[in-house]
Length: 207
Image (cartoon, rainbow, N blue to C red; front, side):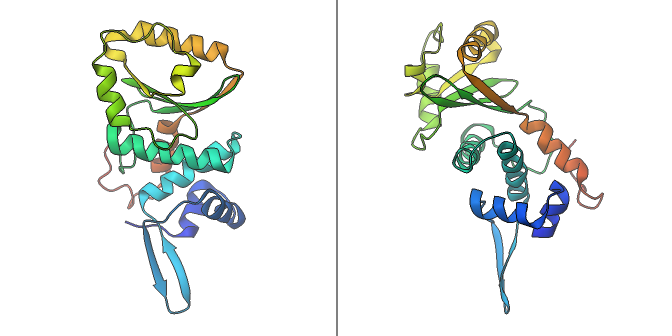
């Protein structure tokens, strides 16, 4: 199933100029596009619609266009290498949230689910999530604290199943030291989008 520009405006309850801002300024790339005799028009996949939703809310919460693009790229990488369900047309049950944390001299994204936490610096497109995931799994212990200079170099993948108390402590410490942070509840946004679909569009969706 594909979606038109007017569908996206309807689902997000936004006007055409806001849609065009998200499309052009944020740079969401349609995965299904067609060319008619009168010019080019676009059809979007569910993944694209979800990207519009995430970008719209992140931008409203204060993320710049560059930070919003970085956020979407991080989520695509997360979905491809670790999660693999974020952009599926099914309700989210993993409690996925994204935080943008502003430390004294750096900014970091935190991607958090019910079972793992990922932390890495903004504007670092060359981080290899899979290699860092495997490398950290070779460690006997997670670090006692997550130092900003370490966050600049690594993506830490901390398993909550075995070290839940430690993770809660380090995250709490990190957020207490932060100058500020923004939290985006991605699971809630995705589920709300699916609930706004017409019954025919919801056919076969996993609950």
